[in-house]
Length: 239
Image (cartoon, rainbow, N blue to C red; front, side, top):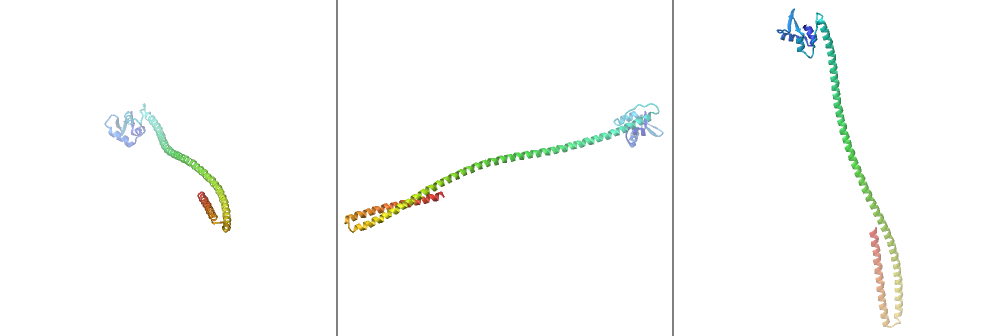
């Protein structure tokens, strides 16, 4: 069955220029012929040329062309609708792919951010542990210093008590030394009175006694001075 150019256009979905070019190219073949100076194209040949856009339909009788045109028109409309739907689906698919890529990028960014936050938290935990350890060490050192200061206070208080006792001893010693001086003065007075009445040998013994007494007094004085100096040095050391 042969189709007119118009029918071929409707059947194939191609342009008029394309159909005319096909007819001119194959004009010498049995698939193309002319009637009233118009091209007619074999529908089987047309179907083979454009298998993706046309279907071979068996049509009989003079009404076959109209039925074919109607069927082709409906199929073209259906194809057009399906093409639009397919394009829409392709667009939706591409949008979804783009959305997936965006979500992947966002997820990757969130993962990196989460990793950074996790590392930061770990670092902060390590710093907190180090601070806690340093705090414990510092507290131990402070406790040791407090105990050391307390011990020094106790030692200083004890030294103050000892110093007070030594000071009392020194005062008592000074009193004793004063009493000795009084005795010395008394002995000297007695000796001066006895010198007038006693003989020279007795006077010599008295002089010797005086010397011995003076030596004892000097010894007591030196001991007292040494004790006072010792107390003073001990007091300055404990301050």
